Image 1: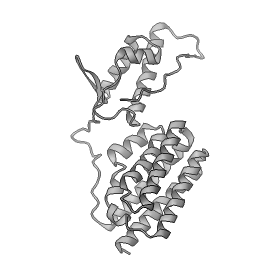
Image 2: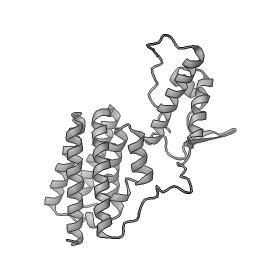
Image 3: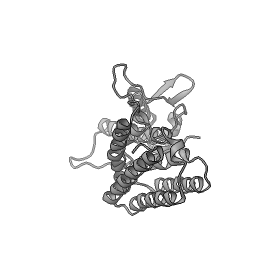
Image 4: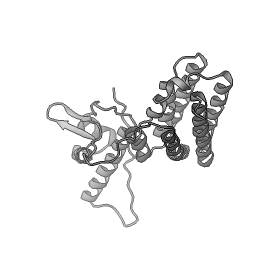
Length: 253
């Protein structure tokens, strides 16, 4: 069942005086559109899942159905949802223009690995800093749960790619920034940097595991304490050390 986002407070104020009815409806539609887009990009509504009905959304947000219809119309224009008569609205995969250059470059060489981790360092450090600023209680619980699952998998010697993916994805979602979320889910999927060399990364010594645990804890603690600079730096250290461990395991240097 899809998770319904927290209702938007409907009290709207303006320094220029009360909004006219039409302006107020447009503002509410814009706010609902933004909240729904964020929820979809954060993964609260999975691709292919159905959205609540207009009536349900109107009740949740405390607005009329016409306002909800306008918000849904904007989501359709964004290419985020599609609506079919008799079956409601559902989330669709983001559409990429035929002439777009957002396809992920392949990784074929050591130089590509270096570039890939340089990119990760920039983007994920930014996402970690944003997560420290913007997390909500559910976000922090999700990061902690994914981290505990990752520890369990690593300590038991099981494949940890899925849990590792969930940890990084939870941080990205906690950023509450659709640009980070889109970049790390559609342009360069979070899963890619885990899967490319997962077999090499799962062959780690106990000492390496302890080091990785400490890096993850540093990231989590900085985010939980709302320290964006420290969170970004902890993520940079982790990404750099991950690269070095990877290269060492592959005996490429």
